[in-house]
Image (cartoon, rainbow, N blue to C red; front, side):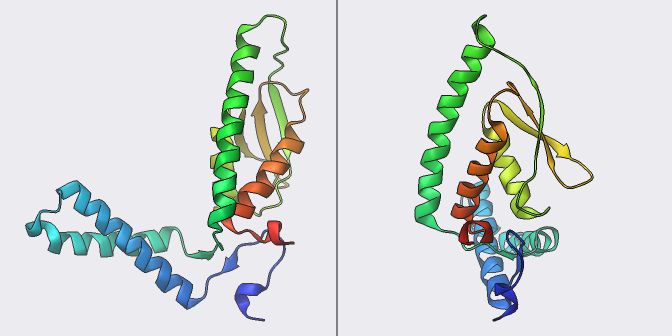
Length: 179
């Protein structure tokens, strides 16, 4: 077993050199394409664009080191459809709760013990979670659990977040979904 295959459930796997190089090439291409879009492909700007893309790639690798994610396109497409559907359902629910006087609106905080350790994958999950109407990650406690603001604390928010975490990390390649 190599170092990329070891670790506990949800832990970020260290990237192999081939993953780092592949990630660097993909990032460099992305930065260079962004440069081309900004300059409208002006041939006089290709040299500075290559330098800017190289510098941006170096900085991005220093600030966000490569990890093994194991992206799964089919699961990601399923997750994207699920996310879109849940966003509409939750958005309608939030609007009804805010505007209809008989529907309960009991805002507050719940504590969610994420399976993912602090790091890039947990941050990705929190960013996606913040886009869902009715929930907003607000920070972490001393034990590493997440404080989540929600519009109705009587709803099964923790169970829903657990399901969302499993689906999200299954699409992005976490060990949690593989276990």
